[in-house]
Each structure stands twice: as structure tokens, then as C-alpha cells.
Image (cartoon, rainbow, N blue to C red; front, side, top):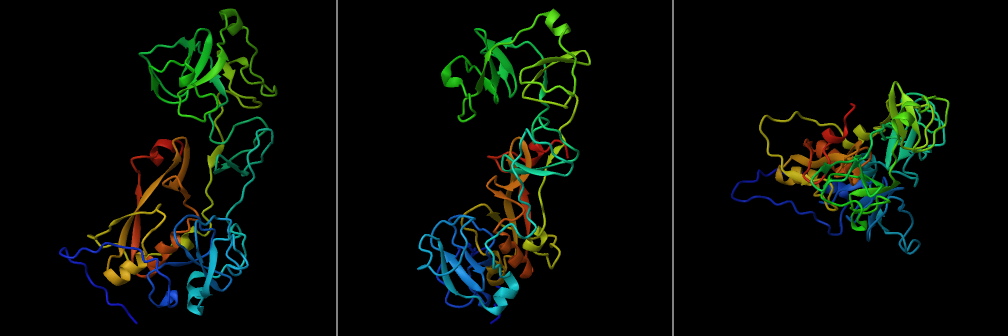
Length: 374
């Protein structure tokens, strides 16, 4: 039957508590758990999903490639467990996926970027767990998605000083050996193994570069002029418009003045449908409690709206994938295009509620820090 909303009073605050108890009646008749179509949900949260006409529940941590099918006896190693047959109303409301291919809804699956391969304009590649799209044709050994220009202006490395602050990209020399700072550092002697990070796999600040390069004025003035047809090896000295540059990687047909045409690409196909459409405008004054939208267990927002009249929420946090990648994510952990929890936003909006997003977070990179060319 219909549930009459009850306004919470200051004397009796309501603390949302997810109910993970076993359902005894279909989800469309008032259960507190959230039902959703299977779309590659991943995590330790208890999910109730529809797949091929049935409702399944995960018994333990579930991966995005675990497909719900059959019974537990038939799939003892699969975390999904058959609960019951989905109702006609549930199939109509949430959908009924019947295939284990989760990329068939318009979501682009891109091949990994290969530096030795040429790409035509509008090509999409996967690199460092992000998709990139090029605006122009790209020759082999050109720009790397998300990377800087492969040519770096030549400047003789200065001797390291314990009192100097160094930031990413700064190079120093100690006893004839060159080092490059990977991030902010001060007073960490790069010659000490304890401060070195050769592979980028630890938290040390200095990358050893080997013997320091130095050139005489004659060598600098007589360096070969840049030729776009030449395939340059890494650490090659050239001269371009009267300035000397050193190649940072194997490179061809990219000049020191060129800009990277690769841009982060997000395929938003179907996202609006997943989050639904608000039915009402936001009131001028509203109580919108904070919800960490990256937690393993997220309260049923629609149930809170129907049962407690708490129908607006602030979802946190939308941040960059990392400090160098202009890609919005939920707390760096989940992509924003096809997040499994969007069914809770859609259900809330169908219950006349809505959400707003919080941009930021103390422990991650804000979008404004990584998105410099938009």
C-alpha cells in the first residue's frame, strides 16, 4: 500500500541504515533494498540484480566480469546466487539484460595505445585506464595520450642543493650522475639509493638518469636542425628555431612547438537514462544530507524519500582520476559513465527526489588541477 511520508523532527533525527536482510516480497512492493539491472556491478556491497528474468544476490565480493546465471549448484565459484523470479513490474522498471556482454549498450571498448602505430583522426584508444581521442591524424612515434611534448628544451643540469625545492621534471647532477624529480622534494639526496625511484613503483622522489649529459657551445650551435621526417632516438640533441632540445623518447613528425592532440574521451551514451530525470525543481531551501557515493554500502535513497521524506542528497566526491589526467571519477575508484549505483539516483528521481554533486575532496586531485586545456 502507499506509504505516508513522515517529516523528521529535530527531536527525533533519522539515521539512514541500509537493510540487507533477505527479501520476503518482490522489490516493487516496498522492500528497503535497491534492485537494479545487472551491468557489471563490482564490490563487496550486497547487490540485488535482475538478469534474464531472475533476481540474483551476491554471496561475497563480486567482480564486473562475474555474470549471474543458473543456480548456485551449477556455479559454485560464482558469487551470484539465484533468489527468485523477477516480477513483470520489476522487469519493466529496471530492465532485463540477457547477455553477459556489458559493453553492448554503446559503451566504447578501445584498444590499448601503441606508440609504434599510426592513428587516423577521431581514433579512440585506451591508455593508463582512460580513453583518449585524437583530433587529427597521428603518425607512429608521435604524442603519447596525456603526455607532454616529447622534446624538452636543453638546459644544463645544475648541481643538487639540499636547500633548493625541486618539483616534477627538475633535473640535477650529483657526482656526474643525473637525476629527475618525480614530484616535490627538498633535502632528499638523489645519490642515496633510499631516495631513488627508478621504475616509478615506490614513493621515492628521484629517478636516476645515468651519466649527466653536457655539451660544449660548439656542439650546441652545430646540433642538427630538426627534420620532421627523421626518426629520433631518445636523448637526441637537435636545434629548432635557434633553440636546442633533447628528445625524451623515440619521436618522429612532432616538433618542439606542437601540441598534443589526444584528449580524454568519455562515452556518455546511456548515462542520462541510467540516472533518470528529476520530476521537480529544487526548492529554495532544502535539507540535503551528505552521502559518500563511493562506499561499498550506500543507503536506498528512494526508500528514505518515501519513508522519511528525506528526498534531496549531496553526493561526494567527484574528483580527477589523478593529478595528471583530466578525467572525472567517483573518488578515483569508479568511472562516471556507467557506475552501478546510478540506479539509486534513478529510483530517487522517480520518487520525486534529486541529488547534487560535490566537487573536490581533501585526499584527491580536484578537476581544476588536472583539466588545464578545456
